[in-house]
Length: 75
Image (cartoon, rainbow, N blue to C red; front, side, top):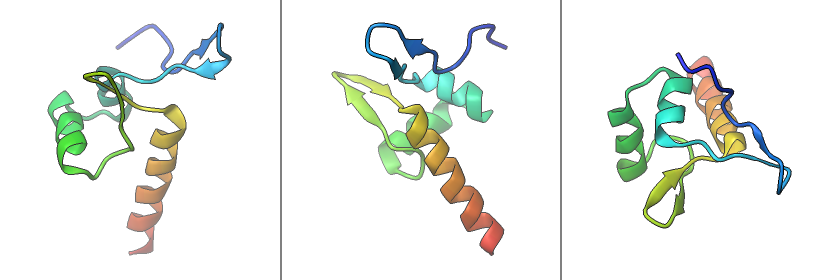
């Protein structure tokens, strides 16, 4: 388990730092393969591409979690 906090604030921009695929996988408790599958096939949180790198906005991750939780609770 990582000892660093996921999504600390960037002191220069006052924005939450984007999550890496590794951080997202750890946060959600899924495999890195699953995260990459979502990025290529859809189904996961919105992806931000920074050059060739994948990144995730913490607010997008939380909104996606709310959507899938609500969808599963409804039925």
